[in-house]
Image 1 (cartoon, rainbow, N blue to C red):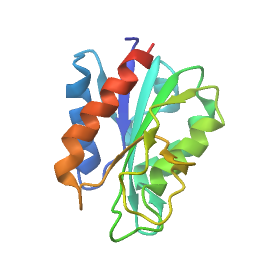
Image 2: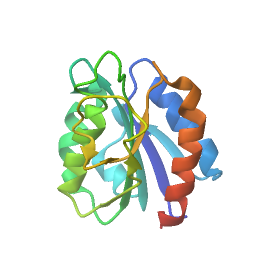
Image 3: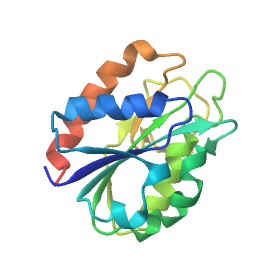
Image 4: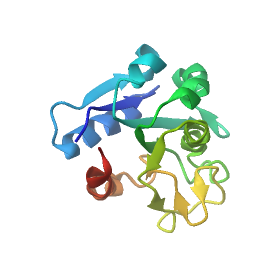
Length: 166
């Protein structure tokens, strides 16, 4: 696996916790975990692989720390990028994991290759900008309503992206 960073934005600590679980599942001690609040686009460009994570707030808002850096994601090079997002499908079924969808739209403007799409059929929600046809653009976690499924979802997703990381 090439040089990899997991970069997250976290307000309450849930997204940071998921980032750490992903690192553990990757079983690679050389993977860096970074807060987007302390990471520049130039630092991101120094990695072969990026795993970007965010939560969704309110009615589809991106986590605050991603607000400025999200606009710079179009400057990424030919890295592989996987996304993970946290959302609440019961309280916000119309904007479920929209934050991850916003990261995806920004990364799509770059030369990066997005990997790690997952099926959306196992979730009960009404709408999401993170959904393309019947797939989410990354790993979806709902700690508010389905925390019992988190470990399995992380494990399955990491196994699916491991062979793709350069």
